[in-house]
Image (cartoon, rainbow, N blue to C red; front, side, top):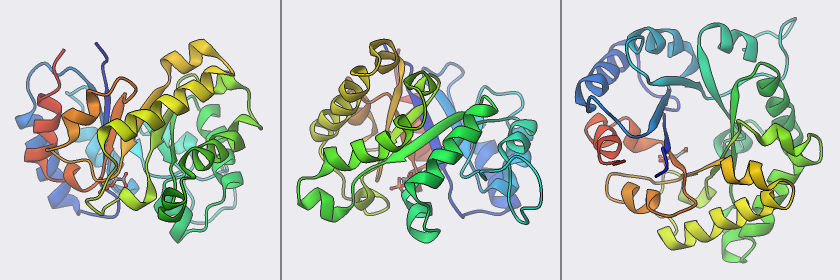
Length: 251
Ligand code: PGA
C-alpha cells in the first residue's frame, strides 16, 4: 500500500503563539504510528521555530518559496542553501498564488526547480488549469505545458525525488473541486505522460492533489490509485481535521 505524502500549506497565516499551539496540538493528536509522510509549510520566517518544535517527531518542514540565486546582492531573497541549512526538506514551487500575485513565469519556475535540485532538496511543482481552461476542456494541455517547461530544460532523471502537485486553480480555497474519479483521470494522465520519457521515474514520482481538500474528501482522494498525497491549505490549520486526515490513513 502507498505511503502518501501529506503537506500542510499554511500560506500567510499565523504568528509565533498560534504556530506553537498548532504544532503542539498536532504532535499530541497524531497517533503513535502513522502511515504517511507529513510536512508542514509555515510562513518562511517561522520555519526554524517549527523545525525546533518538531525535533522529536518525523514531520518534515517545507518552504513555500525559494529564490533563483544561492547568495549575493539580492535584497529580501532566501536561497535554497539557506533553507537546507535550517533543515528544510521540500520546497513548493510554482504555486498558483505566486504565479498570480508575483507574476511568476514558467521560466522562473524552471530556475527555481534547478536551484532546489542543486541543493538536493525536493521540489513540489504545482501545476493545474485555470477555470477557463477547465471550462474549455484544456486541462491536459495546461498540465503538459507546465511539465514541459521543465522537461525541455532538464533531463527526465531530474524528476527523481520530485513531487508534482496537481492543483486546479479554480479549486484552491473555493470548496469546489473535481470528483475524485476525475482527479484520478488527470493524475493517471500525468503519470502516463512522464512514463513516455522514463517508465521507472513515472512509477516512483509522487503526484499530490491540492485544492479544497478537507476531512470529508481526503480519504476518497487518497483511495484513487494515482493520488500519492495531498497538499492541504485551509484544513491543515484546523489541527483536529488535519490530524484526523493523517490518522485515518491506514496501512
Ligand atoms: P486549499 O489550498 O486547501 O485551501 O484549497 C490548497 C493550496 O493552495 O495548496
